[in-house]
Image (cartoon, rainbow, N blue to C red; front, top):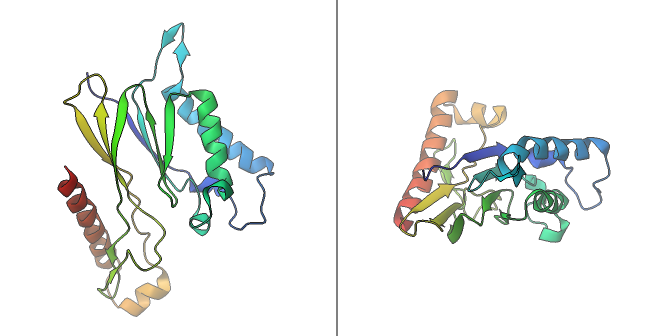
Amino acid sequence: NNYKKLITMNLEGFCWPNGENFEWNTEKNQQRLDNVLDLLNPYISLVKDGQEISRGNIFLFQEVVLKGAANFDEEEKKSLILFRDALSLKNPHYVLVHDGCTGAILYDRREWNLEEIINIDRRFVDYNNEVKGPDDAIKKKSNGYRFKNKNEEDYEMCVVNIHLKAMMKIKEFSQARLEFAEADENQRLFEIANIYNIIKNHS
């Protein structure tokens, strides 16, 4: 009975262009936002056939804003603000928490208390076997979130909004002189292990 849906989605910034001079004024941008809201609606709808529904779900979003806008002040992150406002109109009980970079989570405050945000800066082994991050101006995170269930005080759950380092570029691959699959696997294994160890220490 404790089971709730965990839903993850990469929003690609709603294809929001990077740069301070762009405004949210294109029909395609709005269509992308509307499409995402249509997909989410069944899981956050307040009432159906007179019954309250869709309680307790947790959503993990990658790239609510694109990397180029990660260091903008929050009020400049147009896609984040418009997404947050639209979700609030759909269901004010669901809270969107932005991680300060490119990702965010959405949770139902009727069912969960957010007890702790666990900052997990990206750290990985690059293709020359050197550890990168978090001091290398890497702008993405895989933050963890510790929730306590409001109906059962002994029930807690950690979720992690995992957003791994993308695969290497062709130029990097040729310089590294490693088999593609081996290099990519090593990178991801290191990053996942780092995330796991941080969460374990907070558990």
